[in-house]
Amino acid sequence: MRPRDPHEPGRVASTLELFFDLVFVVAVSVAAAQLHHALTEKHIAHGVLSYVVVFFAIWWAWMNFTWFATSFAVDDWLYRVLTILQMSGVLVLAAGIERVFADEDFRVVVVGYVVMRVAMIAQWLRASRASEHRRVTQFYAGGIAVVQVLWIVLLFLPHEVTIIGWALFALAELAVPVLAERQGRTTPWHPHHITERYGLFTLILLGESLLASANAIIEAVHEHEELPPLIAISVLTLVVTAALWWIYFWPPHHAAITSFASSLRYGYVHFFVFAAAGAFSAGVEVQIDVITHHSKLSEFLASFTVTLPIAVFVLGIWWIALRRSADRVVNIVVPVGALLVLFDPIIPVPFVVTAVLMVAIVAVLVIRPPITVGGEQ
Figure (cartoon, rainbow, N blue to C red):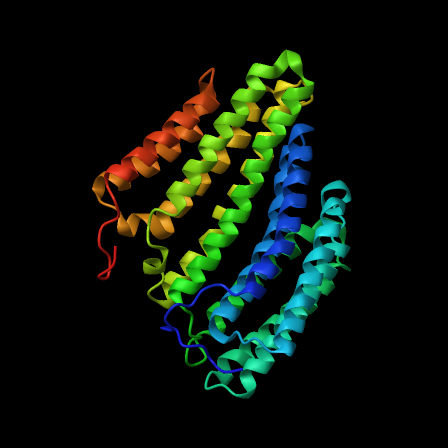
């Protein structure tokens, strides 16, 4: 297992990486569904906190494998088996998400997470055997191992300090790459490959929103009295989802990771982008429940379950990828448009205005294409 060439021409996601992503479809879908149920029952704080906890585990496991694969991926049987072992951990984690939301029981989620991370330790140790990056890869393996012990300790801590322990151990996870990459030569990431992988995961998350749009039509078939508003929410969801896709893929993402610091910013801020995309689909489901009178949330509060994720998604992408490739007009329109979306609930028909604002942002992006960055457009 030798380092990959960070300038390898034509580098694209492998079929194994695409297969790996499929299990995350399951985990994200379960997390979004549980967030939807919590919000519609008006358990807002508990639902959001539980979602953040489980989504961190999903995102961090995915991201760590993705950055490892861009630097050291091979295609032999051992690499495949270890990757499939990580996939099994994702499925175990997904099975435990409902317990986190219902009873704040983290045991199954932690077990699934540790399975994923132990397999990742094996990958890093293997990379260290024949690599000029021996020191950094061994630090990754040791750092991940230490943090996994902490996660197991978390299961035995008093319930009252569980969230505090989670926050501290999550910070420890985030610190491992920061410290590891300072141990010598940094790992050789491939800009085009890594940003393609992020784009593919974004498509998975936006697919959840399209599913929510389809659910609105399905509900409309059974709820004849609420047919017009359900059809409207379906159409508006499609429009907004398409706009999110357009905004995300407008800038050349590979130009956003030109240094270790910028790669950290790109990778870590994507947590908010990904979590917001998943939460948007849950918000659409909440809107459907409000229309069909199955939600305990008021229309005003329910509107924020849609507008807040959209605003976070757009601001996140603007910050890490779009603003560097944008002119002054775009750099004003995009963040201001996101903030206007956030405050749409004060208007009687907020989601309609949200869709209009998103279309307006896309129109500006069409008129003013990305500026040249680093010799590429």
